[in-house]
Image (cartoon, rainbow, N blue to C red; front, side, top):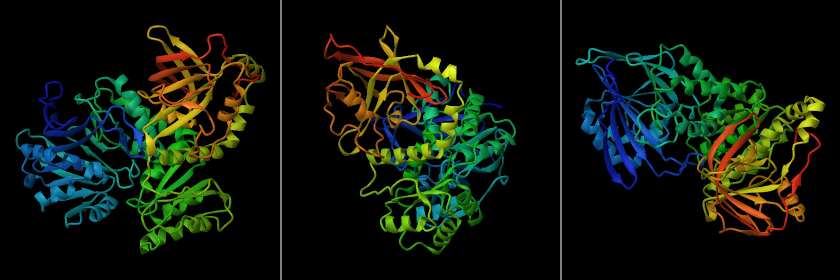
Length: 591
């Protein structure tokens, strides 16, 4: 196979500050056009990006030509211009749509205008979504697992390109398909296996640099669909050797392919090994359902709860009934006050499948004409189900604060689902070992963190005792953060936080404040004296003995905690004569 990878010529066209395009050959008769969005800082469920992102599309030329995915609307002029440099759009026979999220399908309408005869190849659900999205007629072909598209033999290379499709619903939209080119061994997966990482590096040269963003992306977007990931991996296992995974975001995966696939396999197996799960329902293309449901699901995952996202529009009646009926908890959005007949049927199936042993909850979809949230909540409780959390109301377009509230509600639900298992795990520890572990002591600290400003500001705080100096030069420390802590989301690589050291003679009021169980979205700092502009990482407590302003450099995963290694950028002591408060435990299986 003649593959131009190391010596590929890259063309970069500047369109605006920190927006660029890259065009490169990645395999025989195969070219990628990558739009590099260097400064994008927010994506999907409002999780932060520290390295920007890319939007990748691909051209494959056999006897016929296929374009795989388009691009974000913000790149309309430059991306279309670069596409035209590669090929006359009228010469493109097929447009394969991996899924219809706007960052990948934002220019489908423009492609149809340039070539009305192009045939769009996508899942049945994606075709339906596109009809509502592009508002113009187009030729289409519905495909599912096992079906193929033969492009024929390229007259120059003599290589025959044949695509085989794999259904991959919920990765991370309900309409996703993978496309495998038997000629090159490239699997086109769009969101799956991707990461938000903007770089001129075309492939995964340095896995250590990519790993934190790869894991964070998985946790936010793929983890809530772990059961679907497992099914997709089973379908992938039936393919011939995969040489490259051509993702929709970030560098293409080639040099360390086994590492990335094994990570997905391990993480997803761990998340889907139990039978108890929460079914988080949403309505595709309605209000903010997709993002809000992802936030709830992400929160459940942080508490080691298992999740199944369920699209009420795209899931057939039999599967919907099974997913709802077998769930331990069911969370639904408000639906349109006048749903169409198909959606009304799905709502009826949902309500009929509920049972009395389940936890239920409802959230506002904020779709513009929703059924009142209290009316939906009453319907859900009609069989006497228990309320998992109070209705999550949305009174304005969601911002960072609201997404945090939804995530925290999900974490509370995840803890509720795992309550019996957690108690059993604590009781199963060896008594003498437990006592011995309890002799380890530490100081008492309040970790604070803050991101963004004004109405979209997200803040968090927690009591910590597992804090230790980790390096002299540069000065660094580690702090252990339980995976289900709300503040953990604000402590990714590249984020900042503050260690507030509590003083021995005056720590009880602050300890009581930050040990309280806060409802989702509550202000942890209400009634606490803080200084907001002293440290970059977050609020400094006025009554603290000292503070350390920290920058996260690395994260190490343990079964139930993240070990955060951070550089200390600045610090100050309020009273050089005072001592740090110390935490002594009797047992080692809880704080």
